[in-house]
Image (cartoon, rainbow, N blue to C red; front, side, top):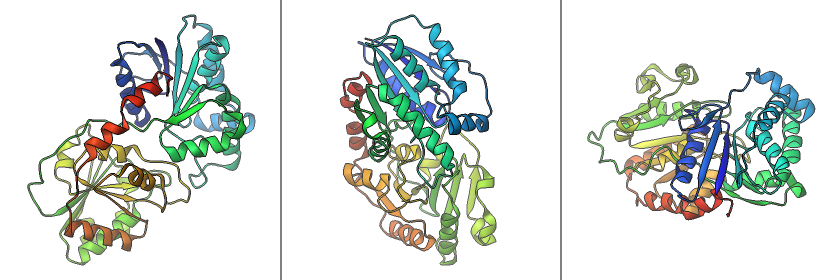
Length: 371
């Protein structure tokens, strides 16, 4: 079976890491022959050099025309060079990077018998609350209704996101659909117990951006410090400008450390008691952060600061994942949850089994267009 993968990224970006992990899964199947085209790459791929257009101009194009005309015409030109026949064309896309979608559309148009799989790690468009203008959101909806109706197999990164997208498409789409969960960066790791019991250490990894905010976590930390609890909060790979220490006291801010970006998080995981994930404070969100799936590979408690009935709460309930606690975005409630974990940190660690079931043979079937 010959598969052509067109990815918005397979390099050192959040979507790129997910796509490259799926590629590594596909490469283990001896029945599959893969060619990869990507805008950047950490895998063996053909480099796809796209003209750089200011994002604001591309958004204007989508808002008024329902299409990113720059990616559209570049995909059309690239397709003219493509003569090789494949059994499957697999477009992997993320928000604001639609070249793979357009290329898949043109390839399917030229070779009508090809199976077209489209996988997106992001909702298109993101739901209300993520700061998208009405005109841009409407343009994206017009775009997906035009181009996704020709897809044979449509996948998104969680069930809530998939349901949201299918509702937007309505009767336009009659192909198969499913979920390809975000693959973590590493396999499951059984860390040794933490050597130093104090301070109780919280760890947040990665960026803080858009609708995700950290202020309530900082206020919760301050409350714990004022109550005399020996606690520390580490940020790794987080822009210091996104962590406003001015909202808390100097005593509390002294318990916070901000470290630069690193590819080796194991030393930080080893010293952590609690891994913190923060979702957007909006109703009816559809995202589960890639950070959460990375945390699942570590035998440490996880605190998800999220809204009621968010995708991550539903996922944990359905998959019966242990060692995951939830709080809304109120600092007092965050504080109480942390205190409960300090008192009773033990949990039945079955995450290795959960992860194996999540990325089982069914995933390979999806990647081969049989799911």
